[in-house]
Image 1 (tube, rainbow, N blue to C red):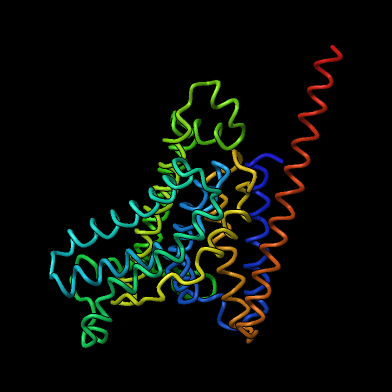
Image 2 (image 1 turned 90 degrees about the horizontal axis):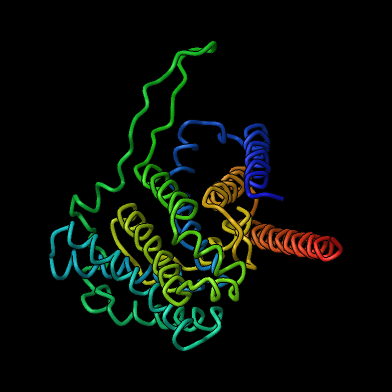
Length: 342
């Protein structure tokens, strides 16, 4: 199954989910709810985009939620304790997240650790780092002080769409959050990077066949480190939108987001075997999860049941990925046998 076909199938499934919940869930098909889904799951789309790069080079980043917390706490400290300008806070916070991602890649390349082990270790280490630098712990009275710098708070901006006239009267249109606009920009930039640049081809080659990448002279170590740095970059950007929405940062920021980001990427067709995937799928996967979870919430389904369903969806996506991988291997073996026979 090609990526293009997989993305079309995912879009059809997303459309079916939208249609089902529009009928079954009260208040689902409203402009306000659509606006909330766009705002609430755009940051997950950013994390899924970032997570895709380590997966594409046959790795994984379990620390991405902890990196969100690191970037958020850096922004908290720089803004409320050091009183730096908001523009500097944003740059330094995102830079810290990018560096944390690059450290993950360095551990995989230089220390030759398995990506699962390396990022599981940094997940714990970065969570500990968040508590170590926490301004909320060092200056307790700041725990109730909101971040008010306009550079940060203005990230929680919505672009109003004029109401449209319809057969049933005036149709209220959802406002478009800035986070969704940024997600779309990141999607286009990363898709172009993956499909139209040498780095993108290197990523797919390293993930698909490391021996072929080595023989082709690709600098695999550099490619892997950059892939993990991109994951950290996306975590940092997502963290800034979360901080703007909450007007603060907590030690638990990003907790559990790593599994949801992995689920969105895998649902979106990024193969856990590496070398296969696009940037469209993870974004569609993130909003599919958002639609399902919000729909079930409006239907009154317990949050615990939603977590179980998320786990089932992830298992299904992994099983589907495995089936596709086995199919590709069989087709490659058949093609090789036919070439040998010829």
